[in-house]
Length: 548
Image 1 (cartoon, rainbow, N blue to C red):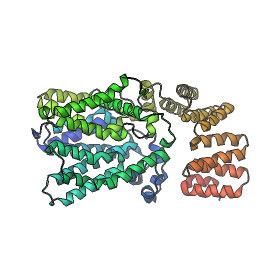
Image 2: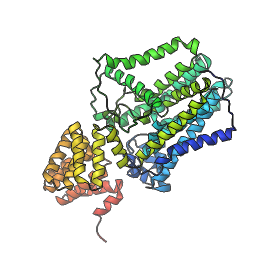
Image 3: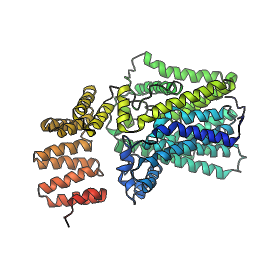
Image 4: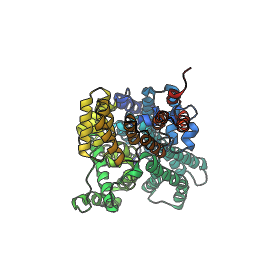
């Protein structure tokens, strides 16, 4: 990418206003949405967030929230004090964070002398693949970490350009923003490597000063990365996954994912919340085309750097490097459903969007740039309403990925909540037909059958769920309810004790344990369960308080 400078033809304030306007308009369709999917676990049903005294818990008790992103959950804690269960405020903050990132990105690119900096920021502002990150409240971790990552980059580059020994405060500012990015989402661990790539692109070399400046970042990145892996394994469920992927399989996943993400950036149609999960076969020659093609493209750009410049190779390296944590080399919970997701490339999209903007500006295709903005804005408007509520989300997902067991059973839950129990049961059974070892579908089917008074079938489904996922507390609680109905109290207690042993913060399990201990006249067990319930969810504990 040539560094011809940013030539603004309008007042910078007007340019900033246009970026803000585009960012807000692009994400207005999802602004009035409800909480969706796991938003309850992160916000409305998170005891650490709801409890006024929960802030220290968020920071010093890993596992108190679904993922150890304490700055993200601290923002939820603060906002819960402001607007409680009203999702509008959370949506507004997500949009504002995205707006701020767009403006910072523009100034960052302009400072680097990138032609088309404003257009690149505008493309980032309105691109429909980012709707998922902005409209989904739980993805606050993306927009918050993204802003801190960009601010950290601005500070580090300011330090880098300064005379050695004259800008120490800027380096410390970069460290501070980098730490904030990590505490928002640890996918930003690749940021120091990105700075070195930018340094090489701008100056043609990476010297001792630059290497030494990023080494201390490892003292932050490594432990945070390990905590995230532990959290995924222990609390999110990745530790129970058996994806059956060899090292060669993971290379195939990564190679195909790179091209998938690039394709969605340049042809963003049929965007889905959960994409079909690919069948990976390391013996297939065709599947090796993806990683080999990625390597060949990077190698060709290296060979041609003297003719086309270092910019294209830098863009490719930044794109692949920023994606690296989500390319399948480490198991994460969503990989059981799909190897890719739109929100995984929130920051990684920037280098390729910059390259596209640079091409349009330097090749003098301003009309194409304007058309691209309008098309992307229109696609963002189409995408936004999908995230208004769970019913829209899962209906759209099933339409685009009808063999997703998660989408099918989740849609079944929405139908059941709306009173369409026969349709709900059908969706749960469709999910099981796709994957009869998906425990969530068996749990949900059991609940739906119980509602329809099909008690024996419900009990069988609950037992199947526990057989498939003995580590899933919801499955054990569900089975315990069936055992309680059959007055098999001792067995019910065994299931509930196993549930709280797996997740000691699962208040529903403690609630039902207290109820069963009361039924079998075990005062000590009842007292223990109620005491835990008072600590976790005082509202539920009130059901066991003596009447005044």
